[in-house]
Length: 113
Image (cartoon, rainbow, N blue to C red; front, side, top):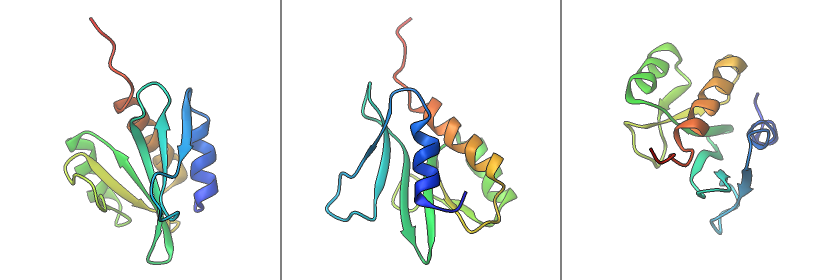
């Protein structure tokens, strides 16, 4: 997974996900939940690569940063709960998909008890 289109297509496979361009700068694509409008993936080009910001638990964010040089504290977001994945070919696709899936699940509408 190295392109904006491949990330968008993967994200659109999730139930009730949609693509949005909320800024005048069309470099930024966000993937949202239809139910709550929360963003689960921020996709943008920076320094010649596509980057994807994804939400994670603090423990998993730290784990991924330690495991891969191309996973860093999120660009423009909370550094405790968000990571940036730099799509330069060094992070295995299965790991990228797992992190996007986790972000999707963490941003789902919470169910009442």
